[in-house]
Image (cartoon, rainbow, N blue to C red; front, side, top):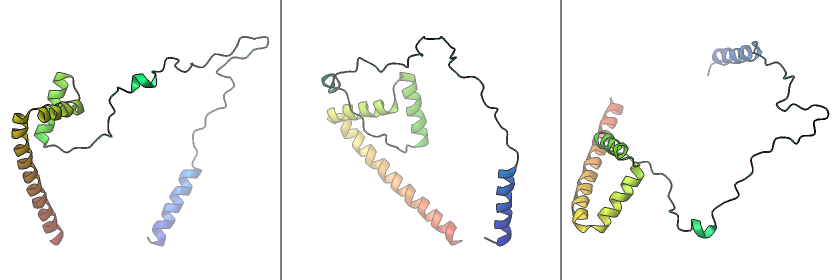
Length: 140
């Protein structure tokens, strides 16, 4: 960085810090009015919940993993999003239900696995093409 640039930056910072800033007047009143002879207790803060679930009751609750970021084909992403909104479910619960259904039904699983493998090969091919395009741009 040149001396001129650093000097001008320093000057700008000094000008900014020395410029007049808006000030807020001191508050002359309190949020709680305190008067002489007022013996009423101050407003109570909200009490913590008293009916927490017992550990034995929460044992049966589902434990969720950290959220995953997934990349989907643009068209399928919008279709899945619309589908989930229409049926008032989340994408996560939809994915879980699909997995459980496929896992339990070998006929469906036999159709899903080849489709997934085909898509994987397509994505790898697309990635290689993008990488080559990037390398060609850098070489020019």
